[in-house]
View 1 (tube, rainbow, N blue to C red):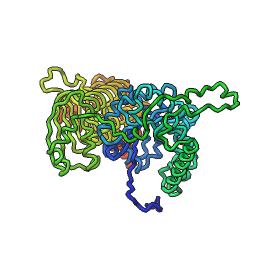
View 2: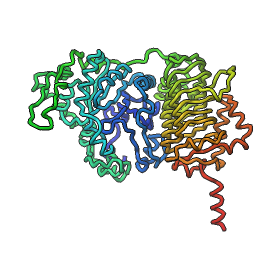
View 3: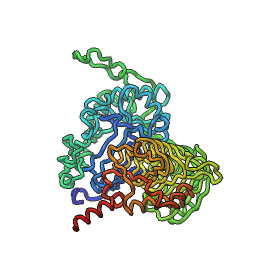
Length: 597
């Protein structure tokens, strides 16, 4: 390329995809294709330099290229929520691990934790949640985009967290289930030896690897003005990037050489022999007042036999066991439809232990055709109760109809396709007053459409990037941190609508005139539907909702459209004010008349 003129293309079997792909709280650009093409998937609960905080990519860094990767619009700030928005507890984390194993059964799943007091208990829970790798991140690492206060005051030393995690896992007979990875300010082969003695099987280098390829730690990553083009989307600065792959290769060769020398000096032949041997460490006697009362004996204890590290590293990826998706993937008609991009109709019963339904099907199709390249049609008709993460990570061409209900995380990470959920036809109650799906639907969705002939729980469409949805009532925090797509709510809503919403549009049917009191106006504004494009968008989605679910509420609205349209509010973030759907045509006409006069 012009930017990287010294790169001569892929050579020696190189591939242009990252082996380890990260799934952070924002889920920007986390699509089925992204997940299906990974050797490892890392869940970032937090990072050492700013534990507990969500990140934010300023709008000026969201170039057209970055916006395309992140499934957003250029110039729109991308706000990542703190991780508790979809990981309230260890059970929720276990579900996310399950989801990732579902979409890519070959990829190991790692969970990144921050070194701090009590991390041993958390690590034990993560191991029980079926993670393959636990990464302990110390406070010395982190990016230049972290707040200064976080860099200086958040997190704890890698050594304390790593030792506690290893000891806790060993004492609970869980050490053989997981690989322990250490990172956070590792700078030398000696740091690798120290981490090994405290229990680490793998060792991560971030900051120093960046420095080896040209980073000068200017700590202005967030300004888009990196002087050596490492953390900038400006092409004029990217041309100044000095690094080459050989720089990184040399760096790691020197690290490995130093590790070999340190091992030889200790009298050992391999890391296998020293991993977890904290008893080989001893506290230095340093005459400093501030450390004179510091007791480091916690770091110098031997937790007990923990098995060979090389055997843990060679373990197979943990499995979800037999799942409903596998039955469908084994169907000859399904295989033929995917291979030939044909049509396949499937009917199944589903129960709530069938978690993450659709995830493996989506990963199977995405690996072969990408997120949007499948021209066929897989039509799946289900009856029953969908488990957690129903319809997660599906792609275009997969259409799921569920007669019944579903739990939390419906359509998590969907990139395309359609999901329609409706109650049984013989239901005596009013469907628009029945709760059919749980909390946190459409988390991180990058495409597709969801129709629910009933109500949803809290945080509906949280962190939605590009999906469209129609639902007949929602709980609190609807459209939170949304950056794209369109949401139509045909019934009552909870409080705090539109908090952190920087993109996309929302339409809310306000029968009792209570909506405005529930809107978070920090970013978005509420207005009536003024433009013909906005009316067309709203009416089109409600028409499709009626077609897919036979909703009585949708039919009533369509039959009385001219009377019901004025009862809708449209919520609009600043990035959407200039779009045809949100523009106020009456105001524009008045301005044009004045100018012509």
